[in-house]
Every structure is written in C-alpha cells, then in structure tokens.
Length: 285
Image 1: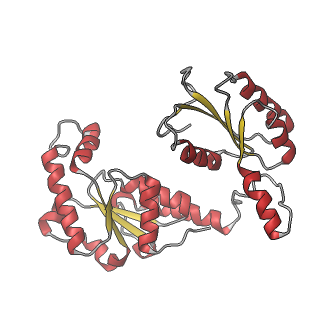
Image 2 (image 1 turned 90 degrees about the vertical axis):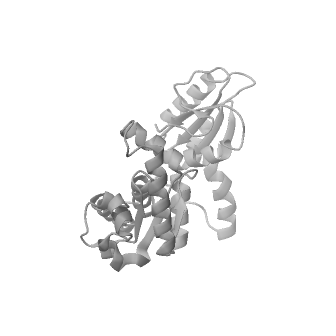
Image 3 (image 1 turned 60 degrees about the vertical axis):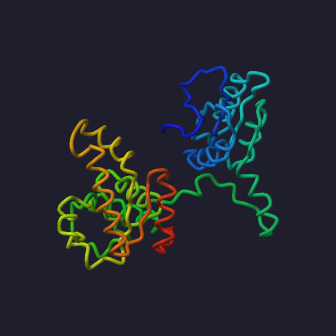
C-alpha cells in the first residue's frame, strides 16, 4: 500500500482519533482509492484508510462486512467507499453499520435511465485485457520510457510522444513513468547538465525534435533538499549550485521557447495533465 496523502493515514495507524475509511472493490481498488483521497482531502480530519480489494464473492463480502462492523466506534462509524459491481455483493456490504458511498450505483443508475439500457454488472470490465491494443500500447510505452530514461539512449527518438528536459532530480523520471503507465505515452527524458550550460545550447541529439520538448524546473531550495538525500554535503547538492543550474535551465528553456513548469508544489498527476494539455496529446485507450 502506498503512503497516503494529506491526513489519510495508513492502515497500521491505530490512533483512536482517526476515522476508519474502508475502500472496498471487486478489483484492485485503485479507482475507488483515488476518488476517496480526492473527497477526503477536503476535510480537516484524520482518516485511517483500509483497502479491501478483490471482494468478488459472497463469502468475501460477508468477511468485509464483519471487519467493518468490528471497527465501529459508535459516533465514529466507518466510512465505506465501494465499487462492487454485483448488486448482491453490494447488498451484503450495505448491511454493515457505516456510511456507504457506492461509487458504481451513484453513476450507473442515472446512466442506465439516460441510455435506456441496463448495466452489465460484469466484474473487471474497466480493466484492459492483455490482448487489447490499449494494453499493448501501455506496455510498449513503458518499455520505450525505461529505455530512454535520463538520456540513456538516442535510438528512435522520433517515436517519442514527448521529451522531458530539466536539471537532475527535477522530477523527470517519475513523471515519464506515470505518463507511460497511466496514459500509454512514450516519453524520453534528458538531463540538462553543466556542459549544456557552458555551451549555451540544448543537447545536440534533441535539436531535431524540438517540437516535442517539455521542460521541468524546481525551486533551488527543494532541489538542494532532494540532492542532499542522495549525495549529502556535496557541491552537486549545494544551494549555490542548485540556484545556478535552475537559473541556467530556465533561461535556456525561455530562450528556446520550450514550454515548461515548476514541479516544486505539483503532484505527478498535475504535472502529467499539464504536459498532455500543453503538447496536445490525447490519452491512449
């Protein structure tokens, strides 16, 4: 389980002051968790998140109900975000004494009326088959992005959908992998290094693909913190050097008219969305 954001706490936190939040799904629960985080972040309350994935039969649904009931503290009853597709499983879960937020029925029922048809109630339809073109596109994008991480390869750069540039540790690699994994986007990324600043020019391998470039910057203070975690007390991580590199990189991107943004206060999701919007790339399905 990934580290939670805001005041959503991990399942191993037993603080009596935290409100239990159960994320129940017949699949991975990732979609329900994303929506739960977004909604819960609007409230200044401590939440203890428990994900219950793969609840795909009646026995598992009853076990989930029992676990939720066992976590009931009276006034602080659990909150349940559910994406159970099968109505019979959702009905079992709703027997628990909790606030139920059924993310499937909330949208499926009005859509059913609007479209004039019933939903299929089939588990797993939101996930792509390994045989689908969308799934294969994502695998290809991941392989391409790994091969072209941190300027490792110049091969087939023409196939890149976008090429990220920026100083070392400005967020290029995690953003590249997120775009490949979540959007099926082929991303190469290149570090801007002192030699580039001395030459006052972009890396020569990137010049034919200038229209695909997007820059990431970061505040020198944050960059220094990140670099000190890797190489403490080094010139590479010094605030003086970080200020110099960031200033040079931003000046180069302005001069070359390359769109860019600062990653300092933005999540990977926000950065990726901005890149897709700026470059005009559609999500790969």
